[in-house]
Each structure stands twice: as C-alpha cells, then as structure tokens.
Length: 187
Image (cartoon, rainbow, N blue to C red; front, side, top):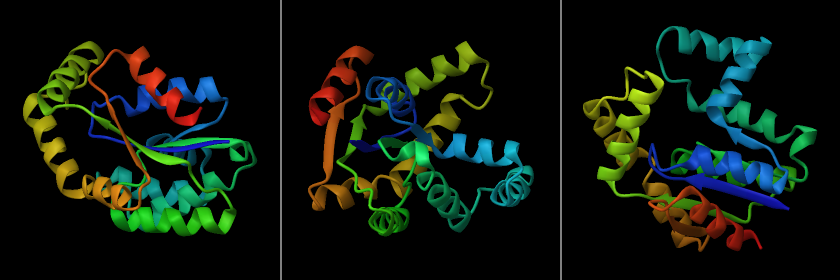
C-alpha cells in the first residue's frame, strides 16, 4: 500500500511527482484543488458551500476543506492507497489528518518534502507563467506566495520531522531522478 503526503513550496514539483507516482503505484493522486473543483462541478453540498467562498475570492475555510478531505478519503478507490498533494497546509490540518486516518484505518507511510532553493522556484514559476499564460505568476506574486508558505506551511516540516515521519528529497534535480528517489522510499 502506498500512502504518501507531499510537502514543498509552490513550484517544487509536488503535483508533477504525485501525478507520475500515482500512475506508477496505481493509486489516486489527491489534490485539494482537484477536490474543490470536482465538488463544485458535481454540485455536492460541500461543493456548493465552497463555491460561495471561491466566487467571493476568499480562501475556503479549513472546516470545509477538512470535510472534503474526509469525504474523498472515504471513497472506495482509495483503499489501495493514495498520494496527498496540497494537504495538510498547517499543523492544525495535520492533526486533523492523523485523527481522520486513524478513524478510517489508513495510516500513511511518510511525508515527502521536496526541497528546492527559492531562486530556482521563482525561475520555474515565472517560466510556467510565461508558458501557460498565467498572469498571477509574476516574480512579486511568487515571492509573496513563498513567504506565505514559509509562515503557514513550513512549520509542518518540523512537525513531521520531530515525529520521524519526514523524508526530504532534493527537488532541484531532473524529474526522473526525483521519481527514482521516491521509488526507493516506498520499495
């Protein structure tokens, strides 16, 4: 069974690695963004609530995200395993995740932290913005997102490290090399 939590700053390659590894391990790649979009498009009760916040340009509150994660991790397709990308985002969410996984009997193997220097992240995200026409991927916006990450999400690294659940991988390598290192973790 493969159950991994992916951490790392924006642009570290979490989504890329989780998608590839999902295919390799034949388990769902679960991203909070995908969960939100799916719930909204399906018109579920949680999706309707989330849509109200999204339409107002506000962050979807933790309590709603937690309900969406609970719903998704209770789906039959996740019984062989899963890869969580973009959740948890803070220590409170990590504590919720521990409780939920204990309730549903799905402990994770480890938390993978993709470590990439800020200058590389900025360069990657600026390039992605140019390639994909993302107006919000300007250097100033990216540096702000990295600062928000450092304040809100980075404490998770210490949280999981103190529990001996963290494995850090140098994400500043070719995609195949990072995937090979991930493979070693679950082998």
